[in-house]
Each structure stands twice: as structure tokens, then as C-alpha cells.
Image (cartoon, rainbow, N blue to C red):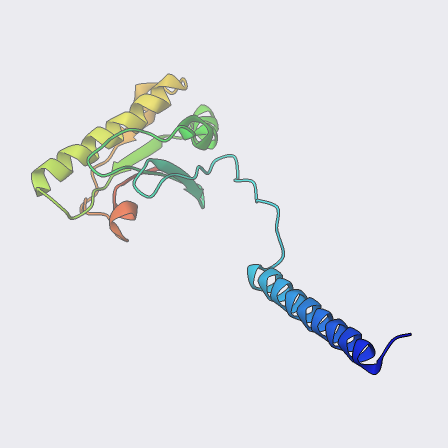
Length: 162
């Protein structure tokens, strides 16, 4: 009924399909392993806000609240109030909030110092809006107002408790 040619053709087709399946499995396996296992996104801590590369953000590091600003702006990050919650508690416990403004090293130095001051005022105003009285807030101009780190890190205001 069937000839040897038909048997060989069937065998050849089976081998081709097997090779194709093996190549596909290899490609899919490589694609999955190069992406790594999928991880659930990590939730940000309540006092930390992610921001665009040149947008406002805020971080709390070792009890210091650090506000970062977009170039040429004094707008606070949306999570400013959350980040200041511990500072407000400390002030209610009898401490003072020390606010210091820094700037980056690009542009006119006099304008940069004024901008650092405006940023510090913005943080002071946020503290006042949270119920901290002005006598419990100390604005302190640092000896060196040019901030350390890259340009985005240099444009900051730091709040500490004393």
C-alpha cells in the first residue's frame, strides 16, 4: 500500500517539526530568562515620593527630610505633608525645625541663592500649614549654599529637628 518513499517523507516531516519545536522552545526560554522573573512592584515608603528626573520629590533619610526641586522652581512635591509628619510630631514634642536651602552650581550665583531662599520659604510655609508656629521654625542659611551631589541632588532643602 505505501512505498518506502512515503515512509521517508513522513520521517523527514517529523524531524523538521521536532527541530522547529525545539528552536521555538529555546527562543522562548532565552526570552524569559533574559527578562528575569517578574516581580511585584515595591510600594514606596509613605514619606518617600518618586518624581520625574527634573521634578520635585522628597525623601526622609536618617531623620532628615530632603526636598528636591526642579531646576529654576520652588514647587514642593505632592507628598510634602506626609514627609513632614515626623517633623511636626517632633516640634509638638518641644523641638525646633531647622530649615536650610541649597542650590546647584549652574547659572547666576545670586539668582541661585535667592531661589534656595524661596525653596526654604516654601518648606517653611508647608510646616506652618501643618500647624507649626513660626517661632518653632528656624531658617538657617548654610555657610556654603551650593549643594553637594549631582545637580538634581544639589537643589534641595533639608529639614532637621533640634
